[in-house]
Image 1 (tube, rainbow, N blue to C red):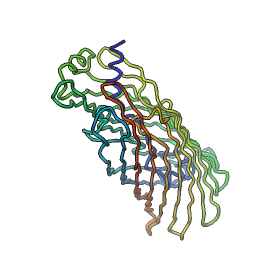
Image 2 (image 1 turned 45 degrees about the vertical axis):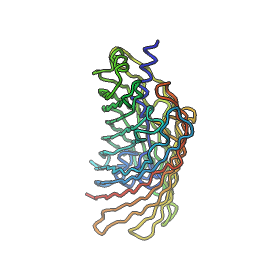
Image 3 (image 1 turned 120 degrees about the vertical axis):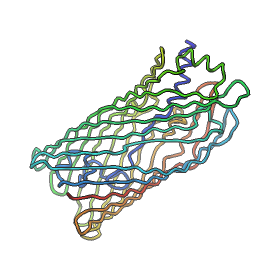
Image 4 (image 1 turned 90 degrees about the horizontal axis):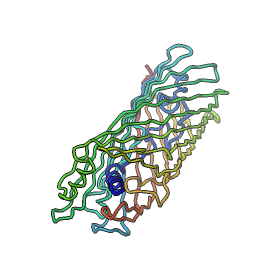
Length: 408
């Protein structure tokens, strides 16, 4: 029993970087128009059935994301105070392609980063034995075939391969005078999944869409690295089989269901509405093994929902302005939230412009602001890691999404 308890504690330190975030790569600002807009190659990811509406086209996308956060410590076991203020800039690419094979069949392809998460609290703050640095990145490759059954109805099925890369660093409170030890674990792995979708067009002005994305099981593996660790800890780690052994993690990306509608009100205005369900109760690590030991892990999450509405305004024959707002519920209760997973409710606000060039290509620029909540945390894994209680005073992301669409 002692062995299982100690091993679980170490795994919590090593693998507590599990999270999912809503994609920055959306068709219209505010995460709107995901399911039924179907007017660009991005639908090859969001609703592959929509590619039956498109000519052969290629879209290249680059999202520049600036994130800012500051966690304020209210109570802590160890000294050190607040973590470093975090200001980060990320570049997130995306590629989308649609090709009508004939009057009935179309092919779609996409490579994008549908979600990701990261924190860098610093090496000297009060919670350094719980978390120093963590990151989790997803890359999705999708291939889809769509079939137009009639003028009103299209279906699609696709295979998705997802790559996940994770990194976790923590400090270790040595017993002797040698200062903090260091722990690091880098892991990655691939997993397959599938997508099913449909698009119903009762009239040229109205479209309804639905997309189902299966869960993806991914086997992550990596070798933990320990530096400047006290000899007493080295004996324990060796007994647990963690020295020189590979850590294997069974990881699940949850299934999702999208529903959406698009309606052209008149020559100038159009509206979109989407709702997305994420089965977060099945998200994260399901089991961990290293050496002879194996630990089952229960999810701390609950199902999450995203709702968004958007408004499009046709400025002139070549220019459209878009506005959107979205809201995502928190997948974690306040008493379950961790420093590795500071997930809270998210409000998303966005504006954008689409401009058709003289050669028929289209340039899109979206600007979005994500308020990702105060995310209060009260966490204590063990006496070794200590307790930290606090919340974020600033926690937001600003996105600049630029894409160029080639009509081939």
